[in-house]
Amino acid sequence: MRALYPSIDPYDHGTLDVGDGHQIYWELCGNPDGKPVVFLHGGPGAGCAPIHRRLFDPERYRILLFDQRNCGRSTPSAARVDTDLATNTTWTLVDDIEALRRMVGVEHWQVFGGSWGSALALAYAQTHPERVTELVVRGIFTLRDQEVRWFYQWGASELFPDLWEDYVAPIPEEERGDLVAAYAKRLASADPRVRIPAARAWSVWEGSTISLLPNPDVRSAHAEDDFAVTFARIENHYFTNRGFLRPNQLLEDAHRLRSIPGVIVQGRYDVCTPMATAYALHKAWPEAEFRVIDDAGHAVGEPGILDALIEATDRFADQ
Image 1 (cartoon, rainbow, N blue to C red):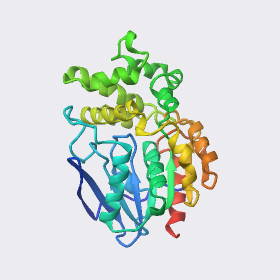
Image 2 (image 1 turned 30 degrees about the vertical axis):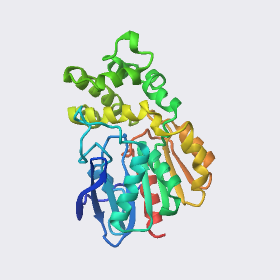
Image 3 (image 1 turned 60 degrees about the vertical axis):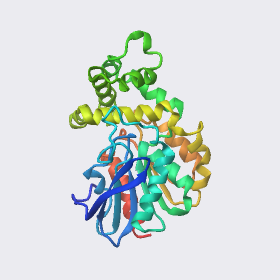
């Protein structure tokens, strides 16, 4: 079974001014003459991490990672409640990816994304199919209403009733009919005594449920104040705006991917982004290889998911 490549450091990094007052942090890793690939992190709002560099053979890939608008090392940070998220949308991020491609100086590249990163990868590839050599996506999320309701309103709550209690704790009973809206009010509060506990409850709910077995380290990272506020504010902003997508858009437009070699990797017991969405994408894009991992949840670190992803990136490295 394949595992992560050894740890590496970037050989170059910096920030890119993409307009609207945004500075996007980016880094390049691996082989400067290797096959170009762009990694799209999850959330939205999670930022990229050193583990993400290790999904690709550093001898064969030129790996671009970046923190999407308002998160990670990009500025301004959503951790500041006065940071306006109005110019952070699916389509401004698609434009940012193109700006980064031009900065790197490549005509096309492999696109790799998991969770929210899969949605962004689909949006980018459907908008710029001529720029994509291969598409590798994991833990498929398309921001349809039923997907958001499942995890943030009712559904996953039935599997984790103990953890759900902590998630809904900041919200009074009378406001629990629309938890995304109730959280939006609290995450916008200027009072840190309101904003931070709400952000922490939102973030820890996801950090506690993304893996098949509990991972205390992930849960702890999601509880850190700045991360939690950034993560919760950006996610809630996207969900409130339905991902800035028309209903069912990423599945209806999957026909635009037909000429792109692709791999879809999905954990059978993914609670955050249940397999129904990945299966719908498989039906809409049958040309892609569909890999179901029967002993995995959502997280990229699940052994079976890692094996399938690295097998795909290894195979595509020679094409």
